[in-house]
Image (tube, rainbow, N blue to C red; front, top):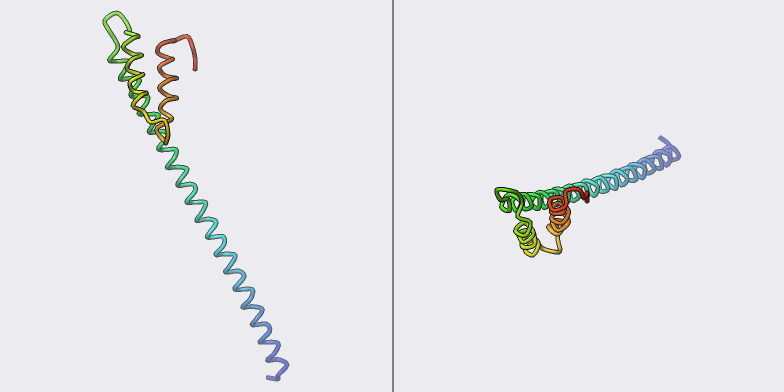
Length: 118
């Protein structure tokens, strides 16, 4: 093999190595982006589950207050309203459980004012 052929082979090998390294870096970048997307999706799912759980808890509170406020001939509106207020006072105003205030209000309005849609 001549010196010229050796130089050409060495240059080709260097180009191949550069291309390979660039491909590996792009692949690594793609993996990093995919990992970040998966992490974001998992965080979004966790927030959605937390929100749904808080909403369910609020609905259960409204239903319990409604059942406890029933009397033989209908609803004791004062007792129901007092129960909802008591629940609302114990409910945090910040964080994932704060959504319960919205549910407590809208669902109690559905009970107290059946013709009104919230």
